[in-house]
Length: 128
Image (cartoon, rainbow, N blue to C red; front, top):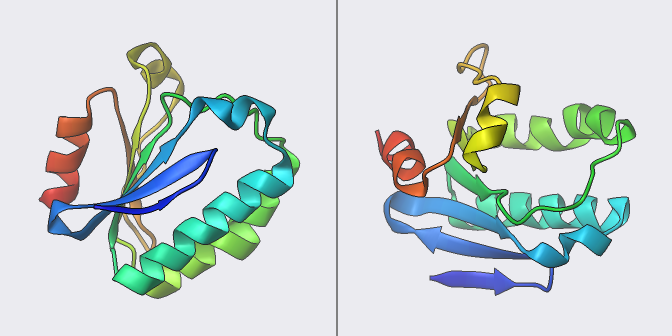
């Protein structure tokens, strides 16, 4: 069920109460403010629908996130997800990029993150 559609992204509620964020190709022209607004909106839907397992499809994501956003994410965004009790974050990306990312296990009240080339595999992991 589509919850919200924007020119840059779309939020969909999947089975097993998984919230999917699908980035669109227009992200090539987005700004840092657009990006931060999108992820804040995502967190709002996590709260509203009490989703603890999250899926982010980055296959159409074209924006280059500036280094300065990392600190904001760690200080402002991730603590919201931790406080809500988010368990898992799965990211879908082109297979050729998987060699450049590292899965992180859940620990100290923080969510696990895994990267996948296949959406069905990501959903299966989130549903475990």
